[in-house]
Length: 203
Length: 200
Image (cartoon, rainbow over all chains, first blue to last red; front, side, top):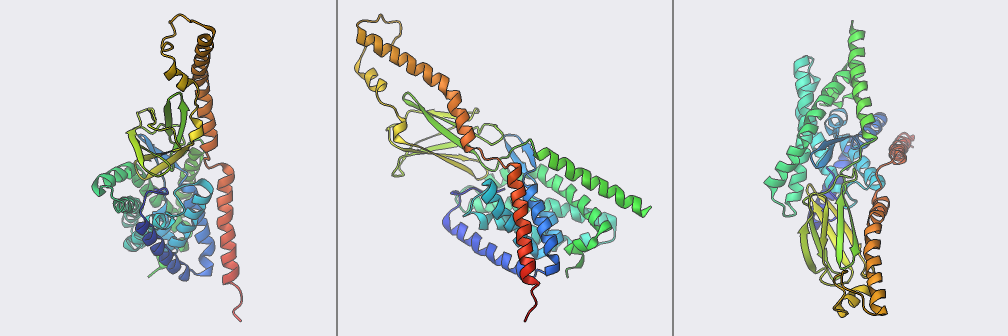
């Protein structure tokens, strides 16, 4: 889901960079020093997760874990994802430096949105509600990221519907797998150390 | 009973993570595409592929000259190859556009186009067919040279391709992963240090 250099137009890149800086700023401001180790571990997990590949036809798609990031970190998901993306660009040449802002928005805003939408569901003590909310959070965050990516490509003149269908279709298996991973992870965390889930405590 | 339930989910989670981590080691990635071009005689051949060696079929190729004028365009076949005869033998910038925001570029410099046998080919009208009887020592030498060029092109092609792969491919190695994780924890340490200083 990383957009390479030289595809997006200037205004899109600048807008993306500005929004990403704002998002990361808010995330950092709200960051409690006690939370920093948790943020780092999840950032590292996100960093490594992009290396897990699921071959779909001619291309490969990769895991994102942004649903889980949102649930665990809330706003802090923004800087966590941004740092991981910067390192991926520098070390692996995934995506590009100019596209960092846009890529951060594409990955981190779904994490935030799904966090807000699903946190009460995940927090619930009823197993069914919690499982469904976790699955939808994982599923939804990849879906939103795919749509945002199509949206940013749309601004460069590509046909939105065509590109969107392509990206969403290619990522459907990822969405399902992410949903499952989020369910299992949330279940495990809730039983072992519920404090990790920001979703449990944020208002 | 509760402890057993906890352990159950924990084991499932760990197994899942382990499987995923193990699976990423042999596979490579489609976050970028590779494009390589080389000259063979009068033609420019291009090769496009994903890092895991899968070919980029149906990718859009555009060729520009140094001033940015578009010279020609085309599509790669299902083997990821696209060949063309350059309308001019100058520095060419070849751009590949694949779906989902993947883009790659390759610059072919003017001096990769060899002169000599091509021009000689144009001048001597009788050397198009190898079956023609050789007349004169100069013709012999010319024929031999052309044949050697052809054979060399053929033999060198796989070597050029392999070289291209080695040069271009920087798939994330173990070192890079460790480096990334190290940086993340380093940043964490810095943030913790600054946030925890006593406010005087």
